[in-house]
Length: 401
Image (cartoon, rainbow, N blue to C red; front, side, top):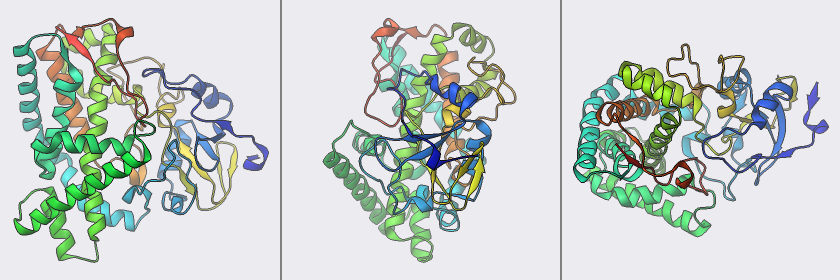
């Protein structure tokens, strides 16, 4: 059995991201070396889990801990170590915080928001049609939709969207911002949320932020002031950043697969299944993140992971595992079953998964049905891609119809 003392770490990520293509090195590792030793640009060495089965174990087994990353030189792609709140906690502390926000993201509450999300989507498309093509789908549709939804859910003024959308980049930046800019943006974000918290105390409102303030004030042992501010700020930032990125990513992939797009246009009832497949197929992250630390010696994928060693779950690789997904590199909008791990697994499964699913379904359904002639307005090589971020995404997506 292999252990860390017998293996030389390879540099990771393996290469710069190429649009939305998954690095082919993952396929080789899944076949020949499912747990490999890697060295990220910053932090200590780690194991990289690439198979679906192993990734689920790392994310779901309580013998792998996020809390043990505190005080360690966590493997990462960015120079700084971030205070990630409940993303660096284990139960019961994690459970204490998650329970406060989970009620806002139940399937029932999200479905109540669907009508409003559809209304916002239709208004955005109406404005695009009125102005006429070409349109930038990133700026005119994909960005305002999730921002307005999360604003209404949390109780944050939509008029402030440009400010907090800018500040939110600090959470996903690798090299796009300097260390001073990141610190400044985070301080601005926390300060902004702190002001909203003060307003809620003076003028209570029945929204998510108001409910969190009540939970803090009525049960002080359950939520500190810092936890309240950072939790709300994290929800605001994470609640729109990834969906803002994935809407244009999904549209781009559909346009690159005209047969599947035609299938979806002919049968819009496929949209929920299509969204699940796009979540599986489209890698969001530039590299694996959020390592889990072994709390004891554990055998995983033919490797002895020693207590205290970090393991990175490669979600994008797990979602292309041929042992789980037939013809895994093919986009199949009707794929069933589809046990992807795009929203994670275990206690850190994305708390906003239901909201993201709903927004992505509404967005794709609206674009497919309202703009059946949707197509790129520029040659594909002219598209511009974001850089210096933890996530992959288009800087702009010029379309016509």
